[in-house]
Each structure stands twice: as structure tokens, then as C-alpha cells.
Image (cartoon, rainbow, N blue to C red):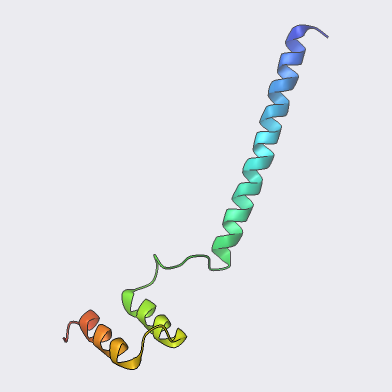
Length: 74
């Protein structure tokens, strides 16, 4: 085996491990999306406000006031 074959083996091994790492990253990123992940970009402001009210982050008066502003009735 000459010097050229060692260079090829190193390049092939680096490519192999690069693909293994890339596949792992793609799998973990895909599984995060399938579980729901961070869906705030897909939700409307009213849905986010409803969730905050359900979790108790805003009281009823603040919820109604913000909902009126979002619907344009305030």
C-alpha cells in the first residue's frame, strides 16, 4: 500500500463519520418537530393568549382586555 491509499482511507473515514454525525443531528432535529417542539411560529396571537390564560399567567381582566385588542374591538 502506497502513500496515496492512506490518504484515500483517511478521506473515506472522515466522510463516513461526517455522515454519521449529520444523520444523528437530522434524526434528533426531526424528532423534536414531531413531538411538537416550539410551535409558537405556527400559532396565532389569540391562541397564545388563550394558553397563557389557561396556565394562569394572566388574570381574567387582562385576558379580556388583550383579547379585545387582538380582535380590534377595543
